[in-house]
Amino acid sequence: MVINVNFFIEYLKHPRTIGAVAPSGNALARKMIKPIDFKSADVIVEYGSGTGSFTKELVIRRKPDTVLILIEQNKMFCRELEKIFCNQPNLYIINGSAENVSDYLAEHGFKHADYIVSGLPFISLPPEISDKILNATKKAVGRKGKFITFQYSLVKKKFFEKYFRISACYREMKNIPPAYVFEMCNRLRT
Ligand SMILES: C[S@@+](CC[C@H](N)C(=O)[O-])C[C@H]1O[C@@H](n2cnc3c(N)ncnc32)[C@H](O)[C@@H]1O
Image (cartoon, rainbow, N blue to C red; front, side, top):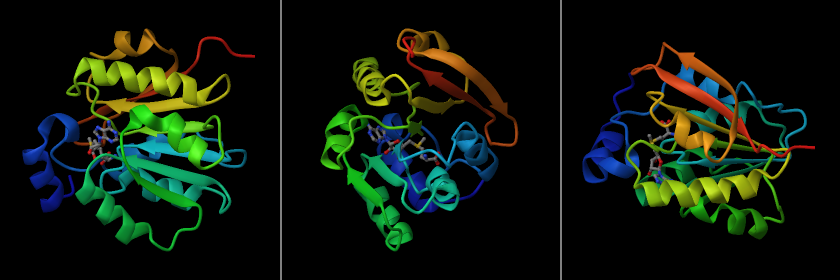
C-alpha cells in the first residue's frame, strides 16, 4: 500500500465519499483498464480520480487524440490532478459530481462515452446518490459503451445488476485490500 498523507487526511475529513484510506495500487489500476480497446476509444470518462492511480494508466495507454474527462468531487484532489496532468493534451479535469456526466460530455461535444472507469466507493455513498450516478451512467454509455468499476466486496453486485448487465468480474488479489473489478454494459445492445 502506498502511504499518501494527503489522501488519508481527505479520508478522515470525508470518509463516505473517499471510501478508502489509501489510493489503489498499480495491479488494480492495470486490471481496471484491461477491458478498454484503446485503439478505438474516442472518449473515456473517469469518475473519482482521486490522486490519479487509474488516470496514470489511462494516460499511458490512450491514443493522444482520445479525450479523457476526469470527474472528481474533491477540490484538493482536483488541484493535485492539475499538477500531475497539466501537460496532457485532451485531458479535462472537472471538479463536479459523476451524476452530471451527460452535461460534462455535452460540454466537450460528446453524447456518449466509449468507457466510463469508476473509482467511486458505492458501498459508502448514500444510496440515492449511487442511484442518480448509475442512472446517469446508463445514459452516458449508451448502447455501445462500457462501465468499469471496482469494489472491495461483492455486496453491491445485485445493486449494479438493477442497472447493467455484468459482462465480466475479475478479482485482483495484489491490491490492499483485494478488490473485484466489474465490467458492465447496458442490457439493450445492437
Ligand atoms: C476510493 S477513492 C478512489 C480514488 C482513485 N480512483 C483510486 O482508486 O485510488 C474515491 C474517489 O471518488 C471521489 N468521489 C466521491 N463521490 C464522487 C462523485 N459523486 N463524483 C465524483 N467523484 C466522487 C472521491 O472524492 C474520491 O476521490
